[in-house]
Structure formats: structure tokens, C-alpha cells
Image (cartoon, rainbow, N blue to C red):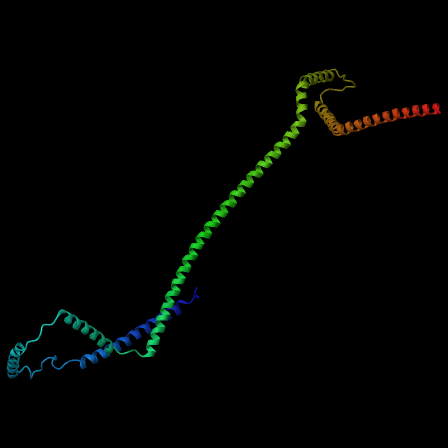
Length: 296
């Protein structure tokens, strides 16, 4: 890649190159034109030149006609051998070669300074074209590389998105399975109680209905002593609600300490068995010692 240049410097360089090229072409045309005019002025034959006014006078024209008529029979009298086509071709080729040689001899060489300048201009122009070609090829390759990299980045991003989606789906599935396992564990502990509750539901409903009837009967049969009345029903309801709350708290405490009581009862039962075994072993030891003492 060539270094970046300003537009003004580039236009100045282009103008310099164009002016140098035009000046070189002008000098070359001038130097080529001067020898041609010189050779054309010198190489013209006197016989081939246009006739002057003296030659075109009436008396001169008649003498020229007589001389030409007198020379005609002389030429007809001399017998020249016929020319062969090979000799004609050789003469034509020789004339063409001679013309080319005359053309190159007539041209004048350019001065070495101008030739060096023109050569430097051609080298700089070729280098500029090469650099432009290199820049264009580099830009095209960079554009292709950019497109390929963008495609690769897009496919990588798409794969990452799919992987994230797959991971999130797996996490959701794992969480759902964990919740199902927890629910199954909770239900596995409560299922036997629920199965038993279906059996006790009828008895419980019957006992509850009996309790409500008894409470209703007792509340109706309450003796109104010392002028008491049953007008304050709200206070009675509040007292009943407070008693029910106290009973619920007692039930919660009992349920809370029931496993510990079971564990303690199991431990006491286990200790009782150990104590019984200890006493039994002690009796066996005592009987064995008594037998040994009797034997001795």
C-alpha cells in the first residue's frame, strides 16, 4: 500500500507529469520535423522541380518538344533486354530498404538529457500504474476478506445464540424436574395420611356434628342467674374464637413436639431393653459364680 497523499499534491504531480509529457512530445516533433524539411529541401532534384516562367516561354516550349521528339527515336532504336520479374522484385525491395534507411538517417537523435527525462517519466508512469493496480487488488482482496469475516461472525453468533437457547431450555427442564421431585417427596409423605383421611372423614363429620349439637344444647340450657341475659352474643363469639385460637396453638405445639416425643419414647424403649438385657446378664453371671463357688 502507498502512503496517503493530499488531493492537492496529487493534482500538482499529475499536472507536472502532463506538462513534462507535452514538452517532451513538442521537442520530439520539432526535432523530427526539422531534418525532414532539411532533407526534402536538399534532396529535391533539379529536373524534378517545377518548370519556371522562362522554361514555359513559347520558344522554349517548341525546342523542348523537338528535343523530346528527337530523343524518342533514339530510345526506340536502342535494344534493351527485357527485365525479369525477379530483378524487378529485387529492385523494389532494395528501393524500400533504401527508403527506410534514408528515413532513419534523416531523423535526428534526441539529446541525452531529454531522453533521460522521458525515460524517467516513463518509469514513474509505469510505477504509478503498478501502484494503482496493487492498490486496487489490495482493496478487492480486503473487501472479499471483510465479507468472509462478516459471514463467519454471523454464523458464529448464530451458533452461540442456538447454544444459549439450548442451555436455557435444559435449565428450565432441570428446574421443572427438581420441582416435580420435591412435590413427589412431599406427596409421598402426605399420601398415606390422605388415604387414611378418606376412611376417617365420615367418622370425623359425625363427631363434629355431634359436638355442634351438644354445644348448641348446652348454650341453650345455660341458667341465667343474678339477672344475666343472653343479649351480648358478640362477646360470647369473641371468647369462643379466642378459645379456638388457643386450642389451635396447643395443637401446633403438640404437632411440633410430637416427633421429638416419639424419638424420646423410642430411645426410652431402647434403653429399657438394654437395662433388661443387663439385668438378665447380671443374673446369669451371679448364677455362674454361685455354681463355681459350690464346685470349689
